[in-house]
Structure formats: structure tokens, C-alpha cells
Image (cartoon, rainbow over all chains, first blue to last red; front, side, top):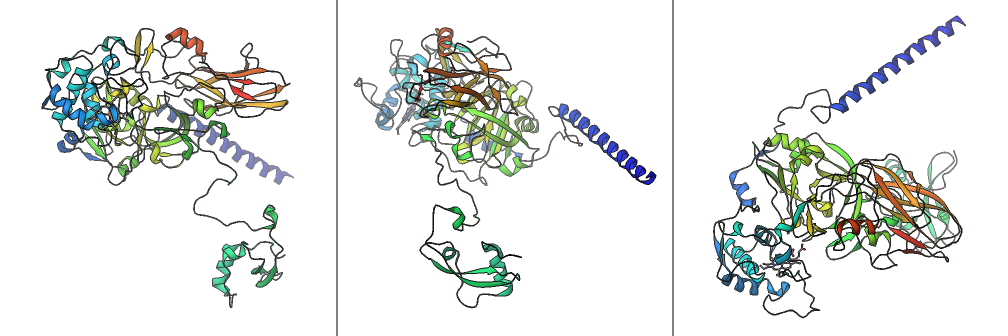
Length: 205
Length: 426
């Protein structure tokens, strides 16, 4: 009997010991989790740099950095006119977007969105809904023509942008667009745009 | 040891190599598995444990009795039961998750909703590169293999298109109404890890994320989100991310509108202003009174009952009402269900674990006595926001509302004959 009792005691001691270790472990984990948002959930501190990847070359950055910001940052050299844009539009865009000069039949079904609108039209397009002219340039340069994205030269993009802005009655027919003039255009819709300032909470807005 | 009823082809093959018990005809699996053959020579283990050949006279196969027929063996990749046909509904530019066919909050990868603007690109991961530049100290290029070396993280969250709202007729199912939401378990690295590696400059407040598809999709994202919980993910539900979801890598912004989670990610440019791309100006914006609201990133709390729903036929008696609820602003703290057209509401049971910015499965037991009624659910999230009715949304935003960021309560009409119809609003 005494012997057995002893074994039981030892067992109990080991079990208790294990418990303590487990609890301590959980506690440590807890501390570690709190740390995750900073550095190093595990024992080693994170290095300032892992050294993975390689430095980007100026060449690669230039090849990919095609975006144009609303203040004009990123606009390439070159220029284009409404007159030149009309020719490009009619050959490379009209098939999908329709003619901008002839009024479309009301039930016309185009494979692509309508590109002209004004304050009276129901359709939301460049003239009444686009807040920045830079977006027209940026979007056409990256994604149009839909069947051949990225195929236009910068001059062609300036030209067709000019043609679209003129068709939307935003710039004059003799206008010329380049990196200087394009960001100066104020679009009618710009004043309408507001940032979402909701951050949860009970109110429905 | 009794002779096994079925012959394990795997061990038989091994045995065949060891003992060479087959002196003449080799038995093909196809032969064994039936087809027209009614007589076959099969190998069986005798009571002494030896492999012997027996000529088994099989009665005409009873195809509908699985206990009388050996099934196909293991395969290199599994398939769904031929009796199950969950499918996405597709249009030219999107496809929708069959919410009504799912039993929990997770979406099988092949049923994850899709929305792309110029198709799904085919990208060789060996050639794909991710560039990070702009207002960083070290402009860097990473291959997929580089990204996989960084400390990784796994997170389950929903992804929802902010144009996820359709209405218009009674005969619409959950998938048609709001199937542009799906949930996956994503694995990748924290964007903050990459931000630190590149040395994002303190003055950078926005970054542009760009995809490698034919739309060269771009969105501007506040740097704060990048440091908060943004990830670059390369795996979905335990395997490499699906092509439709951005293979080989995508941006994941938990809780934010799907379009911001740029797929086929190839470039991150740090900046001190948003870029005003087409997808954050002409699209994904919406009229609020006489203004146009822009940069609505977080998805508002929402829920939908996925059972019973159109086209289910209800029977009198106990019904477990089931559905999903989610919020882009944190956890769903409660889902309330009404079975009397919104007069009274009761808390549904939430399936644990309830995760942050994740589909949460809910259930509510109800006894349908055969009366005509309407059933509906509403989600309440941890910011104390309650999913509104369409009328509340219209009152708050004006009647000009378009389809973006609409999260109204979805109601189902229960007809006396048990038909369940969408209560659509014109």
C-alpha cells in the first residue's frame, strides 16, 4: 500500500509539473501574440531586412510605371489634338463604343460603355461623372482598345483623350493636350466627389 | 483469418510482385470493377493467408446497391459526388457563388465568385515579378519564390464585390441576389513585412496596387491599411491560389471591397496622394444625395438567409433557418431573424468560431405552421451597426442609389403552399 501511494504521489507531482509548464507555455504564447503586430512572435527578433528579392532597376521601373496621377504626375512627353484623335477614334474605338457624332438610336446595344454625357443625360460618363481628365488618359493608355490593350502610342492616347474631352464639351475643338495642359482641365464632376467618412457605428449613412 | 470480401488492389499488386501468383491472365482493374463482365477471375486471400485465384460467378451487377459492387480505387485528385452539382452562375465579366449549396462559411475554391475586367490571365510564376517602388528607400523586385521565404500568415476572411446587389423578380435565389461574396482561407505574407523590407517612407500615405491582367487593373489604397492587416497571398484553402483569384499572387485587404484586392499583383507604388484611377472614380462610387461618395472601402455588415430560399419548397413543421452574415468592420456579434415580416426579431445561433471580417454561419430553429409570412435576417457587427432595410438606405442616401455598397435586409416570402419567393423591391 505505501509503495502504491508513493507512485501515486510521484504521478501527481509530474502531472502538476506538466500543468505548470502548459500554463506557463500558454502565458508565454499570450505574451508572444501581443507582440505579433510589432516584431518577432517567435524567439528570434526579426531582422531589419531579410535580404530576399533584388533591387529594382531603373529600367524595369520605367517600363512598368505607366500610371498618371490626377495632378498630372506620370504624364509622358508628347501631345495630341482633337483632330488627330477623331481619326484614331473612328478607326480604333468606334466599332465598340459607337460614333460620337451621330446620335445613337435609343435602343442601340453597344459592346462597350457610352463615352459621352452631359449634365442632362441619365447615363454616367466622362462629361458628367468623371472627376479628373487624367483618368481618361491613364485608363485608355493601360486598357484600351479593349482588344489590343497598350497598343497606342503616347501621342495617340493624348489625341484620343482630347477627342473624347471635346465630344463631352470639356475642351475646345482646336485644343492640344500635353503633360502641361491636361492636368489643368477641371472636370464638371470633380466638385461632386466626397470621401467616404463612415467608420462604422449604429448610424445608417 | 477470414477471406476478405473485397480485394484491395494495392496490396494485390504488391503481392503480385512478391509472389507472382498470376501465372496467366493479368487481371485489369476495369475487369474487376464490372462493366459487362459477369465472370471474372479474382485474387482472394485464403483462410491460410495465401493469395489464390478464384473464378467468381457474379450475378448481374446491381448498380444501385453499393454493397454489392467494388467501387473505384484511389485517384490522384478527387471529384465531387456525381450527385452534387454546385456551380457558379456566370456572365461575361463575373460569376457567382452558389450560396444556397454551401453548408458552412467556407467557399470551395472552384466556386469562389469571380469578377474580372479583361479575363483571367495565364501567368507563369517563374516569370512573374512584383515591383515595389515610389516613396520607398529600396525599390525592390520579388519573385514568388522570394515572397514565400518571408514569414507567412494564414487568415480566413470573406471577399465581396461592392456591386453585390441584385433584385427585380420573385424567382431569384441567394446566388443570384448576392452571390458575389465568398470566403477562403488565405496564406501569404503581411504587406507590412514587405513595406519594411522596401523601407516605406514616412511621407507615403497611399499606394497604388496594379495587376498583371489585360485591364492592368489599378487601385489606390491608404498606406495605413497596408500596415494594418493587408496581405499578399499566394495560397487559397491550402493550395496555390486559383487563376481566377489572382494566381500567382494577389493583394488581400480583409473586409474591403473585392476590387481593391488586386489580383495578379505585379506592382506597388508608394505615393503621397491617391491616383484617381478609373475604378475609384467612374466605377465603385455612388450617389449620396447630391454628392458622389468615393473611397468606400469597408464592406458594411450584411446577412442573407440561404435556407429556406427560392426555389425551396417548405413543409410544415420544424425548419432550421440557415444563412451567412458578415461585416468588413470586424466580427458579427449578433444575427437576428424575423419570421413575422420584421415585426419581432430573435437572436440566431452563431457558428463558432466567429472570425473577424468573415462569413459567419447562423442557424435559427422555427416551426412553420403553414401561414403566409416573410422571413428575414439582419446582421449586427462589433461597431454596433445593424444591417438596414432598403428603405433606410434610400432615406439616408437618396433615391439615386446605384448598385454599389448596398447591403439591405433580404426577405423571403413564404406562401401558404410552401413556396419560397424573394421579396424583391423595385
